[in-house]
Length: 453
Image (cartoon, rainbow, N blue to C red; front, side, top):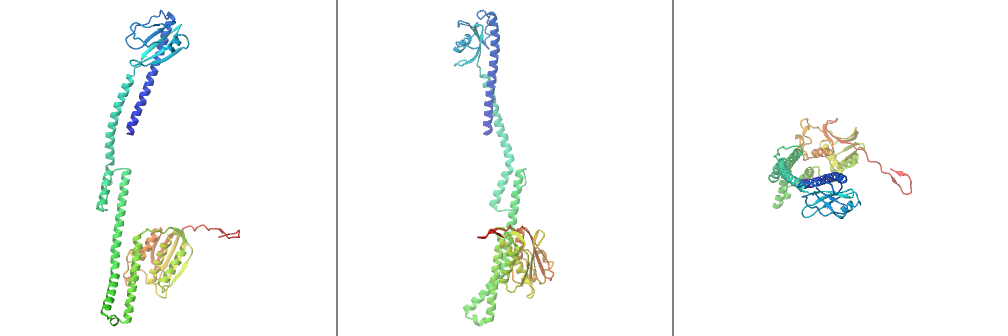
């Protein structure tokens, strides 16, 4: 529609310009013919000048005598009466006059030029037929061009948008079937190809997410099965003995106390496992904002929590102030998991050593124990979900602690590694990008002009 309006406006402007050009050409021709006739009339006299006979078409001439009478060639059609303004030219009031006379039948353009004691007039019939024919021809050409352009444009558009149609159909099919394994054919070019590639990348990410979700659910079900079975058997045993009234006789006080401790330990293990599963399932989704913090404060807080949870763990701290950009609660959870893991292996008389220092542009955290260390075969899988070495299966835990450490470190742009410590145990090292410490805030104490940092 915009192209059609533009074409018609262009044709209208062209017609107007052509009309103005033809009108200007006709007026110039009238002036030239009038000058020739005026020169001849001045030589021969207005009353005696020989007027050529009317050829049947073209220009029309007329001589205005001083007394106001007129002379015209034989056989020439009658022109409109001499106007008042043309009479003034004949009387010498002005030199010339260009005027138009439009009637219901024929319209004339008349040029009056002073000649001797009178005036001469040359006229032509105003003919709009060339402009009308030009406008009609341009209209037909425009219609043909628009129809042809519409057909070509529709064909080009349908051809160019065919990949979009197939992309839409594929997206609808994926939405209905939930089948994320069907890649969309990479076709087209330019923006369309980039769009298809982006959607294929999105489908691949969704496939990976669904696969990770399924593996997490399967692993969680497997890990929950054993503690839940043990807890259910112990509870059923207590209920059965209580119903029979033989709880006191069948279970001595020592055995009952041991059983209740086992139940408490199993419930605690399930609670820890549920919390870790929730943490893993949430992934990087967290309402906690990132801030610039002193990692030493986080390490001290994590060590305090570790001592309160397991009083038998002795933690030796050697930390220096290192600033990083991160989420405090997530980092504290990661450090706490590292200390808990080391506390499982470190002998009672050997403390877990936690060291924090700045090394270049990184904050380096090391946690080591004096335990038996990690076998070389287990090192590549230490940070995998639910992975537990054979030697660790008898110890409490779910195999999720170090995987949570790995996720938190990755989210902060760091790196977690494992090696053997100088004491023969495991050395877990975390490297995080260091950040510039925040600028000190100056405040004024009431009644004092000195700024206190």
